[in-house]
Structures are given as C-alpha cells and as structure tokens.
Length: 468
Ligand SMILES: [Fe+2]
Image (cartoon, rainbow, N blue to C red; front, side, top):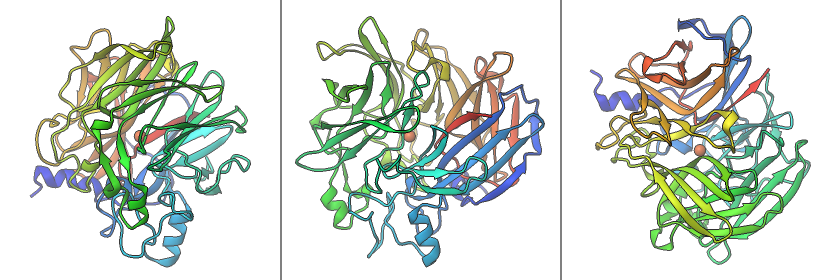
C-alpha cells in the first residue's frame, strides 16, 4: 500500500533517460492557442542507488517541449558533460557530487569545485542554448537534437574552472547576458561579474570582494544594476579539497550578516553594500527601479534549504519562506522599506510575466506546499499567484492527492493576448509525468489542459522558452 511518505519518495523512482522526440498524445482538456516554440528545461536526473542522497547530485537532463502548429512533442537528453562522459566510459562514478562522495572521488581539474553536472538551468543567448550547473563551465546544446555540442567558452573567455553560476540572465531589451561566479577563499573571497554583448562576446568582467566565502545561487538585474543577495552560507574550500562534499563543507553563519550588493552593470563596479539582517535567499523574483530606488523582490527564508534537499526524503523539516520586497537606496546605501507577504506555504521557484522583467511588477507566481508547516517528506502541491498590492486572498491551484507540481513555472502569452502558466506535473500514484496549462488569472479553476508523457521524467528545476 502506498503511504503518503512513499508517494513522495516515488518522485525519484524515475531515473530519467534520453527520450527520442515523440508526439505527446495523452492530452486532457483543451489546449489554448500557445505561442509556437520550445520550452527547454534542465534539472538533475540519473539518480541511482549510489547517488541518492541530495537533489543536486544527478546529472543534467535537458527536456524539450515543442509546440508546433499541429502537435506537441517531447524529447529529453542527458548533457554529455566531461563528468557524464567519463563516468559512462568507466561504468562507475568518478566525481564527487554536491551531497555525496566516496573515497578517491575527483573534483574539477584545478580543485576549485565540483566537475559540473550542468544540472540546474538552460539559457538561450546569441543563438546558443547553454546548460548550466551550480557553478562551472556552460555546455552548449543543439536546440533541435539536444546533442551536447561541447563546453562553451564564449570565444575563449571561459575556461573549465571559471566560476560561472547557473542563473545567467538575459536583458530582453539589450539582449546582453549577465552572470556571476564566486571565487571561494577564506582570506579573499571574490564575486566575479560578467557581461556579454548580444553576439556573445565578453565585454566586462569585474571582481568584487565579498564579506564571506559564501555560495550565491541567483541574482537579479535592473536597468542599472546587477543585484546580489549575499547570505552567509559559507563554503570551506579547504574542507572540500580534503574530501568533504559541498554539503558538508557548507556552514550557515548568520552572525556574519546578509548584505545586498548593488553593482553597476555596465562597469561592474560596486555601488552599494547594504546590510540586511541575517536571512537567506535562494531565488530572486524581479528587480526594477523607481524614483532612484532599487526595488528588489526575493523569496526569503530564515536559513538555507540545501540541507533539506535530501533524496528521497525531501523537505522533511517544516519550512518557512516569505516573499519580500525591499526598497534600497543606492546613494545612502540603506534599506528604505521592506514589505513581506505572510504565507504558510513555503513558496519557491518564483516566476513573472517575462514582459515585466526589470519593470514594475505587481504579480508573481510560485510553487507552494500545503504541508509546509509539518514534519515529514513533502513536495510542492500548489501553484499560487501572489500580488504585492493585495497580498490576500491569493489565487491558488491545489493539485490532487499524489500529484505534485515542480520547478520554475513558465509564463507565456497566447496568440490572443491571454497569459498562461505552464508547470510540470508528477503523478506519483500512476508514475507518470506531464505538464499543465492554467490561466494565469484564474489558477483556482485548475488546468485547462494537461499533457502526459509516455515515460516519466524527474522534476526539472529551471527552463526557458525559445519562440520558433
Ligand atoms: Fe535556481
């Protein structure tokens, strides 16, 4: 008999696999007129008995959901990183993973971190599709076949050990790509900030001292600034080099304080370093500017969450997370005002209407957990629309028992101007994966359409939509 816990554990029963491009035939409901193009997603897969200890341990698996005029197609393919190829050739694990390791395992070539599994996100820039890991070199993917082209160097600007994070961001108005990476060092930790022009050439790289040698997962862009929410989740690089996993080498040091760094996105110079208490944030929501102030929207938590990314008993502890909007003054270097949206659903994976990126944005969508307050394995089972100007009540879709929602939702505008939310589904009772389409303005109505795949695939993290 399936218990509630075993249902949640089944999220990782499907290891993920290369799946040839095939038409999605099981469609329930009526698909609205969605824009033509492909939704690419990336996230860890290939979990096996030896690596089932942390959600970030799997290898990157690119999924592609293509909306043609006549049909929807799905394909998936592992990113053939150096790690993946070496381990496939050897027939065993060779490299240390984020939360698991073994005697004799390897880091990257210069011992600056893990050999990247490219398992967090996928970004489209300058005509290239790039798979990115928590930190490491990007891997270029053929957008049609999903074959791995090879490591992406941006014309020699990036090496296999360049610190390069997963949440690279493209400014839709300039087509520039921005990213960052942390050089871990107990004495001189540095934030590296990168700007690439619309054709993919590196035009700026700056190095900014950090107040601690901490991991940073995401950042935000405004028209003027690259904005970094720097929480004191400190990585002991010596401990990593001496055999610890990343997870074991991380320590939450709230006494060091959290800061927001405002960096001039053209020059890469630090403009302000603003103390902000002792919270943690994994993901930003959006950032814009109003009357000379920077308005930064993030999901805040009282502490980091990586230690509850335990596979298969994910999110076993009660979770707290709060959307927070901060007004920051770059001139005085001060927090002017903070607004939070109180909720008990531990929201994560926030997404906005792409047309509102870097602009005033009243609304965002995120996943939530109905059981966030309770102890025991759990997963996201809500899709919620939040409003900054009217925090309650919230429009919510609650998935049926045993069905979960996953990853960063995708907001797309249909042919007739309607805004739709697409979200991954995993039916743990019937062991099947799919995607739901909901009206962005009426989530409570439930999906207007659900598409179910022939074979299950694990929940991915982040994606991008590339119009055809
Ligand atoms: Fe992320």
